[in-house]
Length: 141
Image (tube, rainbow, N blue to C red; front, side, top):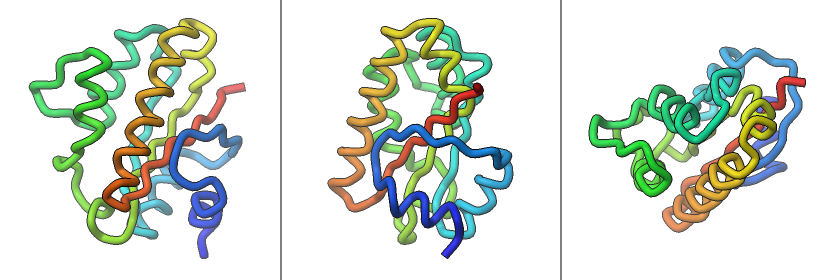
């Protein structure tokens, strides 16, 4: 069992704080080895709702119809059919690594709370079809 598989097994679906020194590229590679689709959000550029939604659009490669609001984010996270395998339907799950998530938390606590709520709702929705959806928040400091 890989180290990431162990962590994912321990924390389960949902949103979790995760302190790790491993580079995002290594995490992404390991996720793909265990049939998980991995998306990395660059929290260093996220300071408010608009920049968060823009970063989600970039990282998840949302379709052109993404409306850049909370409802549109929830709708797109509930679908993700455009994400290439591994992941959906292959026994794996969907992993989001939110690097420097604390930058957003400090800059706009209200928007950050809504973002986490949308992630939690997405985890619940994916659980309904037995696909783990996990968000690992990696603080910068």
